Length: 300
Image 1: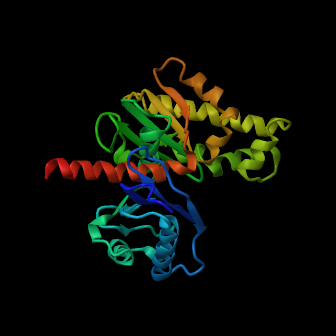
Image 2: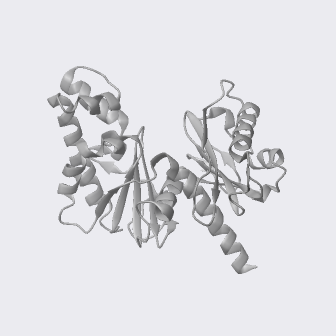
């Protein structure tokens, strides 16, 4: 196969149950074939590093000149050092140096393997090649098992500044007598539906039922109102022009978007649905990699 991405990087999206990897080129941020696999049954660090290595080799098949790797990981994680501090997710990686052994597997210098937050990566993907291209002030909200968030100004992720919560995270901010994630997450939707119907279902099943089941429709209506109110109050100081909604729940946006937009009618915020969805963190990892390369070259 010809070298289709002469200036390219290997990118990973490490999730709670599976990992995706692909090669991404700088010129058009186009991904090569995406390789995805569930976590290995062996939860030890050696097995996971072998798993990442094999997945990366599969993604790089047919490509030459791949310059390094950028991995999007959930937190808590020491992204500068490449060390996970997660205890509830991927416990086998707790305190393990991932950079050096992974670099060795690909015969790269350790600095060629880098890490970033998965929510930040999602936003960078949508800023670089998705729903937030050209937007000066943008926020990305990922709606799924939990609620992820990231803030960007002029295409750069920010974690401090006016209106930006600590680490750019809104999940644990006070809301409605609890925290934001209590009302805006998979478990919140499931709990609300169980209260209304007496049944516990996956969110996808609740969404499917919404056309004929009043309880299911009401769950998403309430979800939309809470989303709009939370964004209106929590984003007021940052004042984003665009809020991109991603994550699994956003695939059913038609069921809750009108209510959220109603709550934001008197603000300047525009809600947009993610364009890249599952590929956003992969593209965002490449955006981060090439931006660091440009910055390093400029300062050399």
